[in-house]
Amino acid sequence: MTDERSAERLTRKDLWSIFLRQIFIRSALNFERHQAMGFANAMIPVIRKYYKTPKERAEVLKRHMELFLTQPMVSAIPIGIAAAMEERYATKKDIDPESINAVKTALMGPLAALGDSLINGTARPILAGFAAALAMQGSIIGPIIFLIGMTIITLGIRYYGVFKGYEQGVRMVADLQKSGLIAKLTELAGVAALVVIGGFIPQVVNVKTVVAYKAGDTVIKLQETLDGLMPGVLPLGITLIMYYLMTRKKVSAVTLMFLLMVLGVIGVYLNILG
Image (cartoon, rainbow, N blue to C red; front, side, top):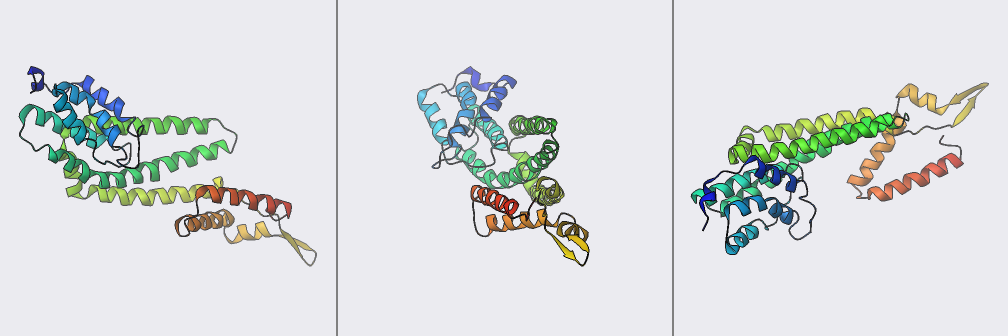
């Protein structure tokens, strides 16, 4: 049984503790239950506040040790919602504790798609491309912008997820799903990411040919001919080939990296690339 403290709501101090624990949701990642241990760890401030006996605490920990897997940053949203549901169950006993896991399971897929699209597919490539472009010009500002930008984005999402997830509970994500906003955001984020990444290709994929041939008394450089047809055609071609090998032929990124290194050395040695 819970004591008088069970009537209290979670304080901002409690939510900050949950927020800090959520940052390490992948610290105990395993392939049996994935992020479950990290999720259960984030629930410890709730468990300590509302559940006093070892039996009660074991029951809650067991509940949150069920398989859980989503994009790590947006996992803050179901963590905030689960904290609100655990609070309600502990203080009012008017919800089924099994519904807590049901909500977590229902949110895993949609939030994973949203997080991967907005963070891994949009924010990170845009910042990385911008940083790489600056770094290739010898500027240290690029990496600094990337680190600061990603830190602000990731901590902001985690903060919003925990605090707003707790405040608004299940209603927040239910409204997003019902309105179709999650699907729209996912689609728009994918389009934006492709456009931005495409624009960075000529800057970050530096491939040029030094092949030249004579037409009468005139020396024609192949690179100039290609640029006249379509600027950046070689970087684009290399990128599309790598994409094809990774997605269709399932060649690992590490293998492709070494392949490009070998081809680069051979190309320079044979006076094809420069």
